[in-house]
Image (cartoon, rainbow, N blue to C red; front, top):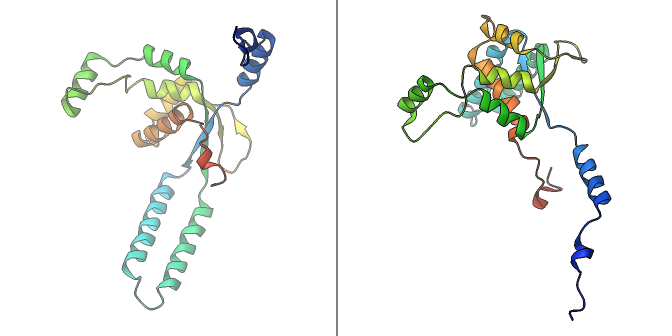
Length: 202
């Protein structure tokens, strides 16, 4: 007869306790992320130019007299310009792996898209979703709200049909859609694991 240790009965959790644990886990908030897009796209382009100028300045005048003052002046110019930019903020929340898999299954790539992809990237690669429909579907599924320029309250999200109209317009570019898609995808693709070594190193 073995003594010590725990028996199967002792190791088996009480069903009520187990249900309580699951209930607590399911109360976990959804992962949230967002992206800010300039209300005036020309301001976004100008900001990129100013930041490039600042980067070049740091590289070219590092040994010149008074270079720290010039850097400070350009940095202040960038900061002042940033304060003038109004933005649209699109908010996304995770929908869970099961929902993502279902969306992917409903929007597979066409044979033509698959062939074109392999022709450009090699026969050992393949598309997993339809690049023409899946991005809009994911945006509609994960978008939970929009913060308008100059406001703090969150307005309702766009519907799938509204997202299609948005990216068919002239003011919202293909790259805007790509950036928004990857930020929305991040809500479910980014792990929330906490490594012990990361704690206290924020």
